[in-house]
Image (cartoon, rainbow, N blue to C red; front, side):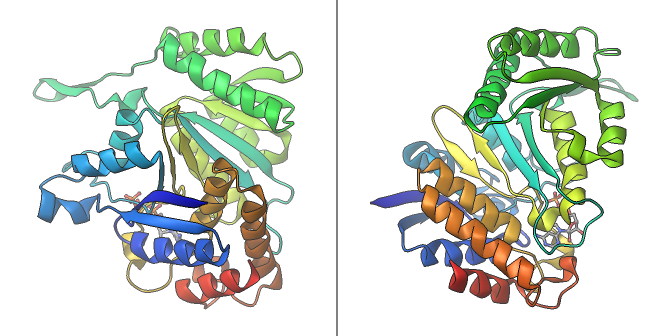
Length: 332
Ligand code: ATP
């Protein structure tokens, strides 16, 4: 069986970590046909846009994409390629597992969280305008449709993966209408899953409780912005962004990418940790039904971490991106 996958190398450290992950995926022995597409800052020169239409067409056709980070300018410049991809392709569920890795020194042990973040609306709707000079309005969109859909995704995931508890994270004490609607939808869906404990927590308190003891939580269900922030917070529990994988899932397509950004500070230096993207590749293999290969990839990452001989700088080592890829590939 051959899989045709859209491959987006991205910006910054993107091409380096993507090459590393492709090396490991090749080592599984599965047959991949990579349809390489340029998106992000690197696409602007040639195509005049960060997300050329043929990139979207490629993902629509192949239904699976594997992506390195793309740069998003702060304050000005082009809109986020990630947000555009997620919205245009309706990749509504952002799945981000956060698990303690063997051998990695971090503040906590036994962290095993699954973050489910709504990916298409909230303050990421891109609806911002200047009302009068000095006054700006940013519109937060929360709909019953998207909130119900993400809640159903989270509860179905809990059921199929034996998860016991879902905590919906909100600020409905302040945003009574928008976050209130999100909670109403979560509560309604929760009724259909009596075996999963459902509770709710205000986002600021959630951050404090997470930092005190992340092992108290099982699954977190969040709107887009809270999900973005809390994901990075949680990545810190297990050794940082170099180890945090992710998936963006829709009904028609799925896109796999790490939580981290393009890390311009270390780009082109063979310093980036490719493990987050390699673990995202394992999630892609899960999605393709290649469970055995997915487990082999994860076990190979764990083995390299446990040995502790080959680690990138973020984990206290001196190995380069390519060395890590090779070490993992030989263990797959
Ligand atoms: P962007 O705007 O694309 O999100 P950013 O620099 O704001 O980029 P990240 O790219 O996520 O945010 O980087 C945050 C910090 O984490 C940086 O110091 C970066 O070097 C580090 N970092 C991110 N990813 C990795 C990685 N894979 N390996 C090592 N360090 C990483």
